[in-house]
Image (cartoon, rainbow, N blue to C red; front, side, top):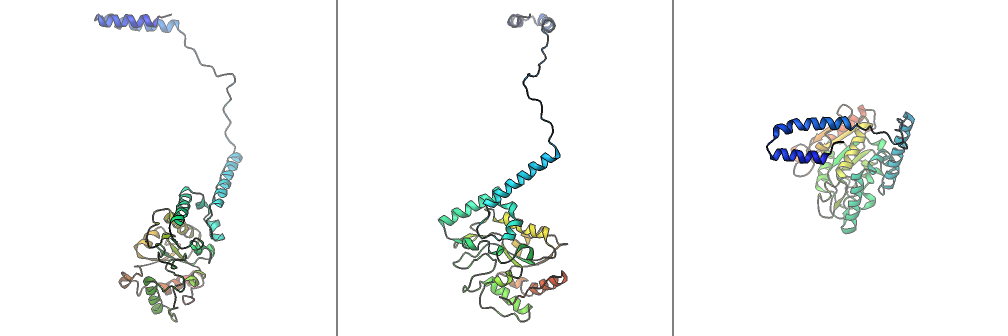
Length: 303
């Protein structure tokens, strides 16, 4: 058997002596001789090594998937927020177990411990309580809740009685008076009467810190409300989406225009209402489209 240590010594000595020609000849012969006298050992599997598992059957794969879904449903059930309507809970259950939603709920809980948050916990999801998800006919998208005391109660643009209507809502009332025969200013700003008829008044962000607009932006609410819009887009037909302002129009960009009706105008804010909100006639146009879809129109006067 070849003495490897001796081979190294010989190689080193010949290199130092400048005998590269001899080294070139010597090395291949040594290696060849070594290969002849040293047979390659083939590795044998261990006698007690477990054999490879056979592929899973379709029934086994199906059972694994069902178990995964059941586990996700159990996780989601533990994360359902307080005051979430039953029909909405079933439709959106896949969101409750997702990491972003779990982080969002933890963030809101921490904010509620340290600060005054609007709307109150029981009203954050009031839009899911007054109308079943299958009964939604119209969607009005807002941005984030009012951040003053006793204003926000879970419906965009709406305020609780007896809080006076904010400027944007006052402009909506002006447009309604010009557009809908018989509409009169109701003397308050509570739009629950619309919500009960199937008008989803949905803010993109559902909570806010008192007196700090946009303070809960980019915490996960946008992703959640996107999932609400997407569910309606995919599972309903003939809805009317009223998108006022660039923010709402961006959020509604993915709505299927062949499946639903989309009405766009500037925001009813005093800063922009005179640039196209007044005179848009969205309320009467909404009812026209609902009738064409075989749906009952909204009684905009029922407030």
